[in-house]
Image (cartoon, rainbow, N blue to C red; front, side):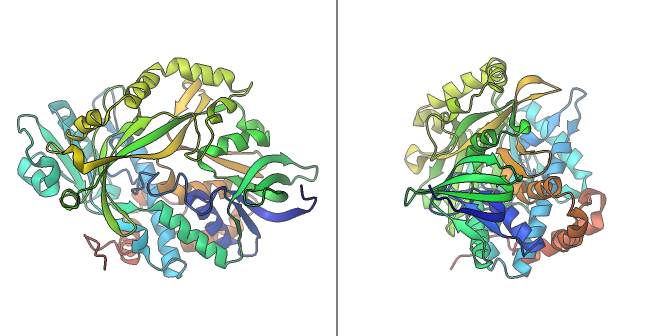
Length: 500
């Protein structure tokens, strides 16, 4: 082991979209700070942020039905959708700032305009969608959404889905033309390229093995260089753990009280990917359906047009899988080694509470390709098995923690930041909407961890994100200005991308 200890201001663990965003924000706000990055893989955006491991579309709550809940009185609660949409608007503003300042050259390499559609079948679901549409129509964030239960109109919107469909069951959809497809793997790589040009010390093939507090208040990391096998020591005033599913183990090693009584449950995603260009050409939208009764929120079926490596693709899923790994490139012992004395009861309680989820996962793992094709045919009635391949996506680790509302071992479906009281260390845990809300989440990290600097940093943050500290929903004029300017800067005014 090297006796030399390298000191820096900030260490970022993991080279995904979260670390890329936090590093870029900090470099824009305090360019003089020294930042060091450690990534286990050979390049940026290779694990949870990778375009094949991440559902990837801009989660703006325009079409995801699991962000809107029907209440007992029959009304539809859209508060979660509003929150996520506001957060996505923050991401769009920051990306626009990066393009305007030539920190990102070609926005079309990571963001593409794409309609977002919600699709439901059955009388009860059609009634719900209509009520949801009415609730959204009153909100400035969702202006421009259309509703239709006319099969002819739906044939215009989603021809591939409507062809050869039996017309006896009620069907309806809502459509928003200003949705997007976002390639977070490409964006993470772009951001790390520009961080590299600003003297950020980026170390690929470096795995963080341990993390502890030193007597002088710094965090010391034991880091293994996977190419040479040597072990190095690095220390920093502030550490961000953004290693996807791998964050939980490092949070536990830090020993901070805030990391106690937290567990993680891994769920892997499986997608069907179309290999027939004629079929791919017939669909141009992200279409979300409704989760089946008893299925968890992350299993909402969707048929997505995606643009990966400047090529149009078509994905359907997600089907859930199970692996005890916390990362696609992780270890089969990840789950068992994450169980500690302080979270054992939390994990056991979660197991007892979520028997239906366990049963669902077992059923999903046992599905044959033909069974998956049957589910796909609910979206595309004439789908042919030979046109579709099975692709294993990334691992998602759902957070399990004790909550006041739901007691011990509550499974969380969202993105969580866990930070020390003194703000010296923060870890990102959880899954969707994740990447889409990265800028808001990283601003939350900055606010929590650097409270003494926020007042002086605020003017700079507002230069980059004009709506910072405000609700766009309550400022329709500002919302309109931002919508117009971000669409223009990011090249989202065109309907269909053209690749040379």
